[in-house]
Length: 277
Image: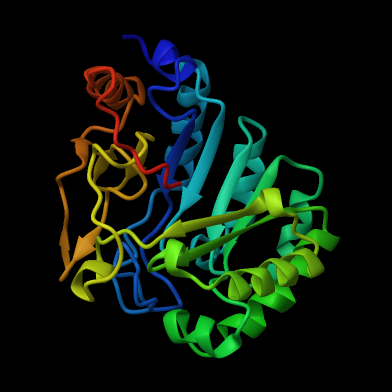
């Protein structure tokens, strides 16, 4: 099966993901990559990201996802995003705590470009949110969202819960009222379970998920190409390779074809994917 056909038929996701870096200013309790301020930076270069994005467009991918670590710890991230957005629409994942001062001012260059920032917000209750993510996280996120929207930058909210089905409806209603009040609509709010990989696995949190349960979305890192953004996880300092597609990431056509082949091998009626994105 060709890559373009696999994308067109929904066998693999239309968005190419890239891990820009692994270091972070937070140390979240369920982090897939054990990111923190003290880990090795291990980052993709700006030139490599642009080249892979151009290749992805030629293959039929229709969007880009940038994650980490915390991507905005890289000082040139706004410039990278502006370049990438000239190639394909971009979603960049962030903890939302760095958008002030010079970092906030640098985002002005993204005005009017197809860039959305997906920010993590797990509860409408500051203490509950900060217990999972770190002190003052809630206050910084709530302050950042209107600033981004005022600059014409799209914002998505991602809520990650240990068990979304068991989360009290009243608490979810308060969270939704909060994000609506901040200017983020319901269709830009994603609720998903913690995936039991990385630091979440160490803490025995979340749902176990492998290739059969996760949506295939080609993901590039400094370590190789993975089947999903949930793939390049780290536990006790060691990289998980169960979802590694290839150590080769360039040209993108090589790992993309391998993923298309693996996804196309699923027998009809056997799909057990959880729909986690």
